[in-house]
Length: 380
Image 1 (cartoon, rainbow, N blue to C red):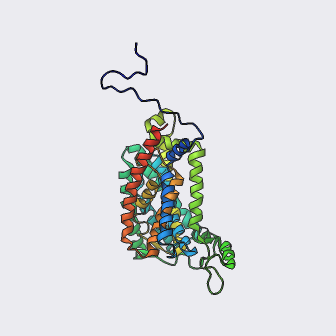
Image 2: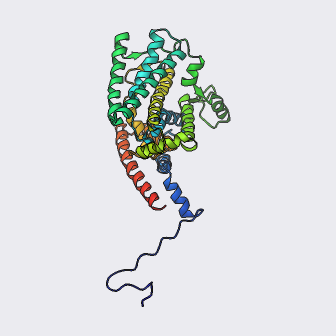
Image 3: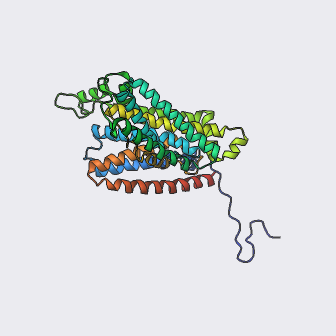
């Protein structure tokens, strides 16, 4: 008799030794857990982007108080859209009408205030009312017809943009609505959406000489845009929703396998409709911020924002197939976007290269996310 460990005759090789188990607390275990996190790649990319600009553009002003305020505002405006888009993508759907909803909401607020004399707070409520209707229609068409959300919301993109242009030109004869906040700059609603926060903190930093100050002693940056505050609030709420609530589990289940989710009692249709409403309301929130910050509305506002939001979500770890992703990843994706965009501006590089960067980043993100997810799954 031959022993169990003997080499078989011929060219056959003995079976490989079983892999050592991954023990909790070890380095390999910790690394595998990090790789399984969808936002790990975006976090790594954020560190890399900051390091590169710190080395090659450290003296450009990008990391001055003004530069930081600028790239945080750009990141926040995209992040407000990218977070709900990430949740919708985890749920297995897309919303290409997002940018057009932004333009439609901004014009709605502008017309209500400038043309019909309504108070700003009521105009904002009306805009959110339209957002709920649009989101509901998008969702109900997707779940009732079985059509891909890509097609349904692509139609919504053209319908909303066409309505925005046609109605604004018919009422005003122009494509822009100015002077929306005239005489109401000090109202609470204008500050809540279009104001600044942390002004006292920047004054204190300027008094210590830690940030740039003007000749009169006031800080160069009077405060951060309220869009940054709304971005952080949305990030916390969305993360809590995904991790700590039953609805978050439903989102992952609906995007992972809708039929299996239905079989265990998940209200898949209701979940998806609510996610579409969330994205439409997020677009309206950003529209409100931009209108009350600039005091004007434009029919072309939000053009291509839907694609930028999807890119930020993909960079943040969301898979195009659904069922995988995180809100924190979308935050880092938007931060990468804003930092690179403003970094290119501060360093004087031709801005046309920014679109090249976006295309390359989304391709790399999709490839890396697929590889990392597969390796992490194999290592379980």
